[in-house]
Image (cartoon, rainbow, N blue to C red; front, side, top):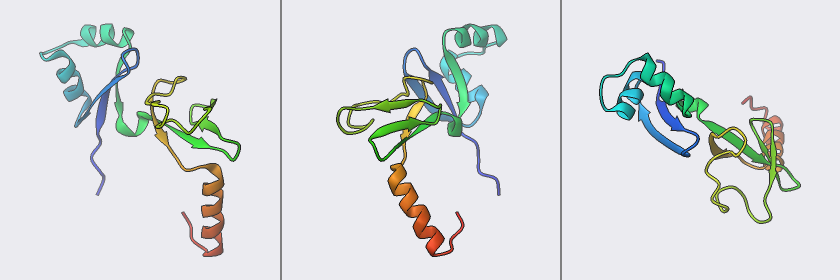
Amino acid sequence: MESEKEYSLISVPQQRRCGPFESEDAAWHYLFGRDYDEHDIAQHQEAGWSVELRDEVSCPWTEDDDGVWNTQCGEMFEFTNDGPPENRFEFCPYCGKYIKVRGTLGKLNELSKQAQELDIDY
């Protein structure tokens, strides 16, 4: 059975996300609060609004062994202390998507090695 898709309404300039919504139409209707047309959507898209699948809304960040955070959008970021949540980073400063913190590369490599030792495919 295919899982239901969830959509989010996003404003990058306002760093705001609303949702989840069951369809793109439901997300736009929430924003406008009325019937709308393609012209309304085009104006809001020019102003930085979009509707995206929830899976496409985040930018996973992974910390390497040197404390540098690698972003899914291909950038790197280094904090003086701690990581994105502790420094109140919610949005990626490069692509504007929500930051999703992943394990450190060292931890991921360790888990990968353990999975290989146990002959587990993931």
